[in-house]
Image (cartoon, helix red, strand yellow):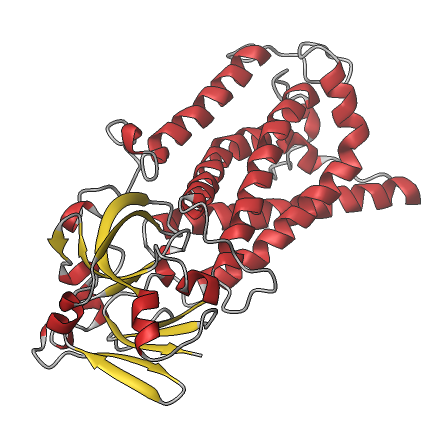
Amino acid sequence: MRPRPPAPEHFTSRLRSPAVASRVGVLLGISFGLCFLTGLVSHYAQLPQQPVPFPASPAWGYRVTQGLHVISGTAAVPLLLVKLWTVYPRLFLRPPRRLRGLLVEVAERGSIAVLVASAVFLLASGLANSTAWYPWAFSFRTTHYALAWVAIGALVLHVAVKLPLIRQALRADVDDTALDRPTATEPGALSRRGLLRTTWLAAGVAVVATAGNSVGWLREVSVLAVRSSDGPQGLPVTKSARAAGVLETATSPAYRLTVEHAGERRTFGLEELQALPQVTETLPIACVEGWSENAEWTGVRLRTLLDLVGAPAGSAVVFESLQESGAFRTSALPGHFADDDRTLVALRVNGEVLSLDHGHPCRLIAPNRPGVRQTKWLSRVVAT
């Protein structure tokens, strides 16, 4: 006999109910919304041209938003799995024959298909990014950004289509069976309240297990926090000096940092940089991968170097690295960041000379700035 395809009546558990799906969906929507908004902040912070300048204060702002981005995305994983499990029987419903009902059904199923596909991609690629694993050839940042808009659009459409049912389900008691499928009569291994509590617990465990990337006091219990303060000089390393191809140039006695503006040009060896007035600032470094860490940075104020070449206040600055190639070999710094007294060409971190992996001989460090834009192994600074 040929196997028969599944039908909604084959799924008899009372746990697969709009009452459960709606309640999980509310928290899932909050997680997705928070992840989307904080992702927009991160994307905007990395744009070379910003219609509205990204603020330099508070210094910890990017650290908080990026930590929330990864935490909310991680929390969404168990929520999405439970949500899909509860609505799975609807996949096998026969579409209605009447045109109006058919259009509603097509909109609902289409939005769900797009939402599920984009959500799975975003969560899977985001988790891979948090471990610095990139088994793909496309640009993670641009693709992740584009699919985020697709996912949020599909989510809004899905909520709009299902809003009457969602409101009914949320207004009724969770054990109310009025909205259940007729065949969903068998008790599950848990009660509905038990399933919801287990789901909240799973989401909470996922949060605690990863939040140590950015919340220091949770590191002892954050077993999935793939980055910590265990790197050189108490800071994680995303790209090593070896991977950047700077082992020889960064340690060469002939090293010079070039600072330029409008034809005025100065070069500085490491000893000359060390002879300039040194200041120390406590600033976080935060990465798009979700980890962050506070550190004491010592070096020359960027504004001091710009004054030596006559760059006026408000000048934007382009930084170039000794790094041979890569998307972040150069970075642009808006003028209000360049003028901020906390923005340094750092030579030391946590009281020690910068290690090679942290940007020796010198690196940029600025407040409220994505880590990938805090250029390491500086070779050239050009004020425009």
